[in-house]
Length: 206
Image (cartoon, rainbow, N blue to C red):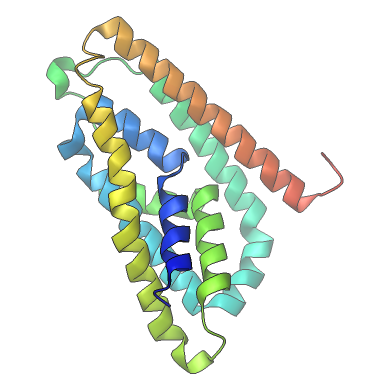
């Protein structure tokens, strides 16, 4: 279970750009690393809970996800577009302490409508869960633990890099430009994810 392929898979999927990491970088710039900690923990533990539930109920979950995948993806992408709009229009927090970063619970719940999180969780459940039903629960627990341990340091890098940029973006125009850029990147990511899901649901449409 704890093989190099699993660790590599979770690490690569966690550290590459996506909705979570773009939001963490933006939060790091606007609120600093410490105030972004609940957001990071919410992502990591929320994703771990997601993979545990999905892996434990793999057969039922896969059947259900095929029905619910597109509605969940659409809901997630609409939410991402709304977040993109808010990020692009956000101003500098007064005194560096104003505003409110995403909470632990909001970040954990967001994983259930995050298309990239679903891809990561479903692939890991299919590829790394044992066939034997009697070992499935313990294997799911171990898989969730691996996700938590590997995911958190990877996503923390994005919040840390965001905080390192704070002094470069201390001037209001620079911060507004950064937030606009991140909002555009987030919106582009949401649209790309939505197009991928539409292609998956209707292969001949696009």
